[in-house]
Image (cartoon, rainbow, N blue to C red; front, top):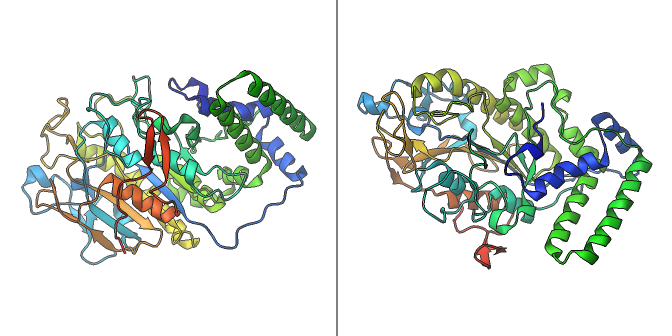
Length: 469
């Protein structure tokens, strides 16, 4: 079932308006399709497909040394329990528990030289999400108004609008957040650039039988819709006379326009209909949150969304020590049984599907977590609850998957030392990865926005695109 946006403890004004406007318009899926059929608006597909990006965030921090950058000749306390296997690219080996990805490595550039200095989840997540070094000390995992704007928010503001009925930037199936904390993890919104630029959130479980877009309920006829649009414009005019904050008025108008354009366009509604996919293809992706989120991402990219951010989600939020990819305890059995199978199936099917549909060339796919894991099993680097069977946080060297978007596959970019602890050559920063995404999407990274916290102009990105060709 869909989770109510208003139930999010740290929900922004924009998110509430975004969800509320669809409810205000009173639409369900069947009614929406009838309204679209009655609408005089005609949709035309672009002659040339524009570039898109799918940014996959593996919350918790994937173990690079156990999956992508294995060190089979190192001592056992470093190399761990897993064995490397050959891939369909000669000389490139990855973990034995990623057999399906091993067959897709000809499509992948494996970046083994990611690095930053932040060992705490929240600030480290912020660095990956935003492409900026964290602004303060690592004392909290939770978002603050001082956060750098996320890549998804910057693309939402500066990305190329392809269709009036589509959001520019989408996040699914949730904003990452630790259970027990009252705010989402840092770095996922417009923050100091402005919350009105938050991406469009599709919150819920795409694997659910009852999956549908929040707010599309209640029903409305086309005349009722037009009447509500006239009422909304009257309220806007009244607000302009009585509310001095023009930024808030502009933000409100922006949300209304987005809601109406999405409703009147069949493109977005069609993209969200996972039941239009064959059962065999859905099974191929895996009947998991992650697998079906990637399938939904393919449909959104196919429709023309600039950037889709997929945040890893699974049924282990309540594991207070080792949720998601944060393997402080039982690193090897959790990777083998709980994490690798859905990841391997989902991502391999996604790359294969994009390729077969001719979408991989124009779709940049990026997948990584906020950091890697300690080279030595059981070593404590940040979290004292790490056990002798786990691996702690390690930002000094980790791996990222980059595929598609014109990037030649079947290659390895950068390397680490013999223990996987530090970058040996061709270092890559979160800022460089962000610059790579901006370059692919055709967004000038030197564009500026007004930093509402510092009250100065800020450049979108300070990195340099990775030379992956």
